[in-house]
Image (cartoon, rainbow, N blue to C red; front, side, top):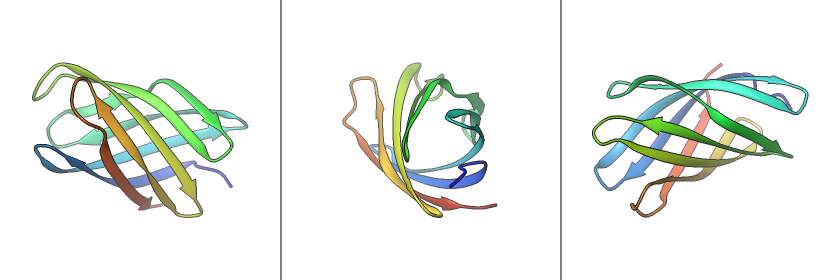
Length: 100
């Protein structure tokens, strides 16, 4: 299963639900991509690692505060679930599905 395409994610943060569009390009076991949202704009993935159907990466967030978020998603067909951990905040639940 290729992860290439757009994914619509919902992150349950302490500040409320955040909607994120994740655009991925997979070439073998290498993945690259960007995330987009209304608050931050476009943020490139940092240090993405694909292990089976689990993808982890970091995002450098600047709004509303400057922090590095660690993302971990498990993909199952057109669905994705996982966590987002930003700095000192507790891990937030992430759910998503393939948009295209």
